[in-house]
Length: 286
Image (cartoon, rainbow, N blue to C red; front, side):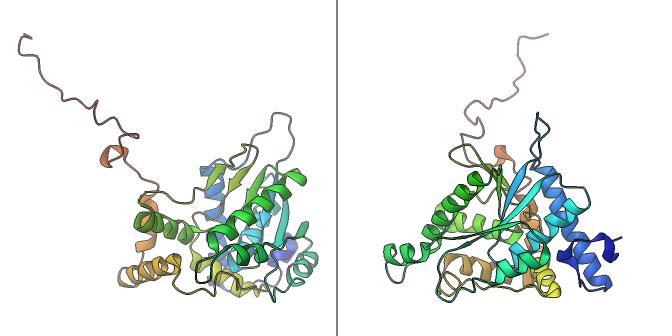
């Protein structure tokens, strides 16, 4: 049972005994399991070997939730993969470098901590007043792919949740002139690694409630989180307003991303509008 101390992973030791938390935990497990199965994240191996995932940790609420739920699924025999946690210390001033290693050691989680000073590169390349996110993300992703290759991993696993996916969709809609978002599964440009987002069906609020209840040592992102006027923050405020006026609106919008009808959009590369013909009865037929 979920509340049997002898049957849970150390990441869940000290979990609240309340009914509310048990429901939250059950929902998270169901959401992640659903995404893993629906998007085919467990790679079949003809040689019978076990896939290995690089689980990326920032020290934020989302990545802690990701790590715990993946280990819960693995603990219960529902995720036949090897998990390696990894944090990329990007050299941000004041970053508490000892927090994650100490936490992972205490929890008995296999891990690799990597230091790469991408912060100095970002600060040197990006003019004052411009946002850092795009370049920072590219540099981080490149290093994570390298680490995954060095560790023999077949997939890089990120902690983006449902709300991240929705926000990215609206950022592309409002600012990019396209309908696109973060896919739950993709292959990198080199074609040798998968990128997975198992929290694709998980609400951000659930991540926050879970990580807070578990009292995980949250590390804030001072590099990009301290910048004002980011497009993502603007979109988040819009979505917050919609959700406040119509509770459940976020989930409805998310479901729409899973229910796309190309024939009811305007992209001729996805639907053959030119070849669409009427069913006309032949006047000479009997």
